[in-house]
Amino acid sequence: MNAALHHLWTPLSATPLLWLVVTLAAYVVGRQVQRACGGSPFASPVLIAILIVGATLLGTGTTYDTYFAGAQFIHFLLGPVTVALAVPLAENFALVRRHLSSIGLALLAGSLTSVISGVGLVWLLGGSRSVALSMAPKAVTTPIAMAVSDQIGGVPALTASLAILGGILAAIIGRHMLARFQIDDWRAHGLAAGVAGSGIAAAQVAALDEVGAAFAALGIGLNGLLTALLVPLLAALWR
Amino acid sequence: MPSAMLVLVGCQLVGELLRATFQVPIPGPVIGMFLLALVLGIRAKRTGTGRTPAPLKPVAEGLIANMGLLFVPAGVGIIAEAGVIRKEWLPIVVAVAGSTILSLIVTALVMHWTLRPAHADGADHEGGVS
Image (cartoon, rainbow over all chains, first blue to last red; front, side, top):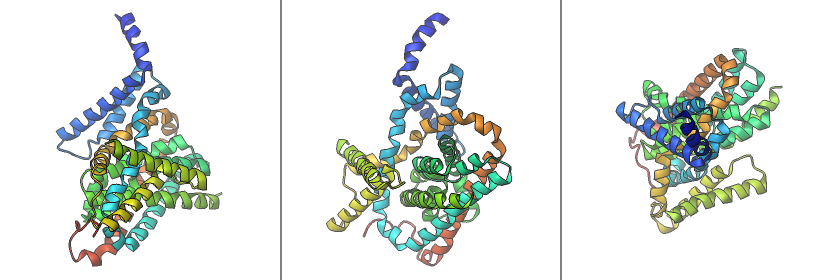
């Protein structure tokens, strides 16, 4: 029996198909769980899917590289979906233009807060310099975060993980947190999700409100620009 | 759907080309997003309607609605970083949580405060290109 299973598993585990199916299935399960929990953001489908896939890889002794060979087809769509954020953005152009100065101020404040508090907390708690530098750009969209991290001497793969952890956290607690501060405005909520939690938090907001989606798209794009310019400058000062 | 995918991937390609040509540190898809927004904005102004061309809208909305799925492959990469994370878990956990929460609150509060005067007219959903 074991031999037969092994016979079946070995070729199957090498095709991209298996890991595509596992990734999709894990996400579908994640969504079902969220639905069963009454749509609670605490049952994040992204987090649940990552845990299921991660456990599957560890349980079957599969390397991340083997997994990614299959899952890269899903990963690739991150590019087109980033471009697609232009649609809610364009549909709310008038709204965005009217609040340009607010957006600029909030972006600058949020971006600086993220970088300085991230690096500062690692440093205060005795973390290593490379972890601190990997933390600096973690709020922006993963490809920018990785490029900046590499440029300033962080570890790009670690930065990607931190970006995802931060994004999941922002998606989970974002609404709760802002409600506590009596902020019920989708413009503020969307921008904050885009600036602090990039894609994952934006995905959560975008599913709920179109104006939120537009401001989240703007938050991701502008914070990406700002961080790519600002963080290498700040890092050069901290030597 | 093919034409919508063409627009999206095409903008991404142009974004990548611009990035490579001008050596900017911004990824191609982000440049592509601003480009497409610009084109859609100009088109809206010319035609006088704020509506997104028919095939593009459902595809864009479908992708955005399921954006979470697309982060799963990269997210699973955390297990490859488990070593460093386990070794420095305290600074990592506190810094990720602390800076994410602080940034979320600061961004939203500054936005909220500076919007206040305009907020008097109430409408949050006044969107749409006029």
